[in-house]
Amino acid sequence: MRKRWIVTAAGAVAGGLAAYLLKDEDKRQQVKDKARSIQGSFGKSEDMPIEEAGKPELSDLENSKMVEEGSQFGVQYYNELTEKEREILEKSNS
Image (cartoon, rainbow, N blue to C red):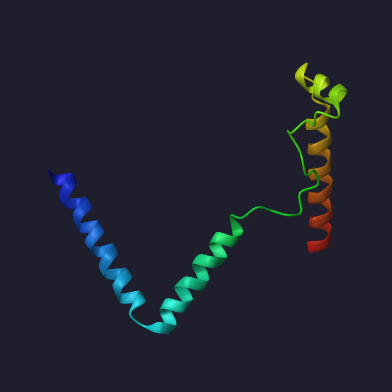
């Protein structure tokens, strides 16, 4: 019973805060812009080095068979590429 009151009170406070923040047009636009920037940060990254990682093609049966048998070459290759990219980014940012 007590938890229900706490959840209800928290919901009421959140609703009141949202109404207060969204009543002014400038603040409403700021909230929209912030939501879009957060949403964009979770979007797909287009700078991935390997386009089809984990999707063996039918035309490359030898590679598919190697992956099926448990080869870790592709994983190691991807890890090395991402490590090199991370090093390059760290050098450029410093």
